Image (cartoon, rainbow, N blue to C red; front, side, top):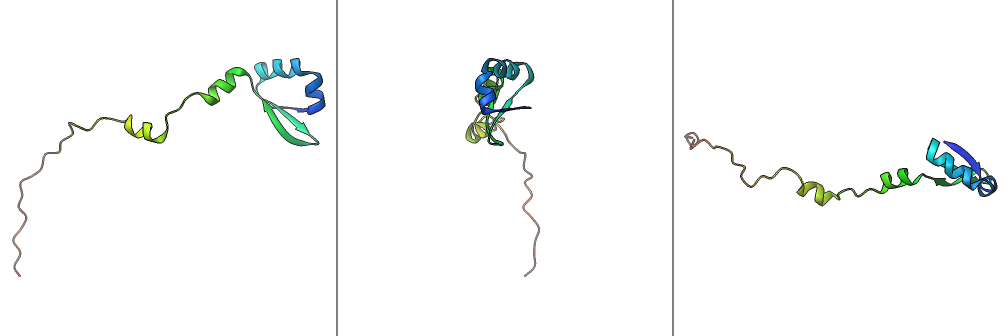
Length: 81
């Protein structure tokens, strides 16, 4: 991932954008600290694509309404007390 100082990124914004599309995310720093990441629109959309929440995940599983388990009619064993 390329790293740009903020003043350089401001001066060469078109190039930063082009490189984000071509090479991937571009990190922007200020005083040596990472402050932002510039993504291509394709990368951004992939990150923000709608994903089901946990409830939807559980409800979207296999349906079990017609699920039945055959049971043995065993009455158990006799126990002497």
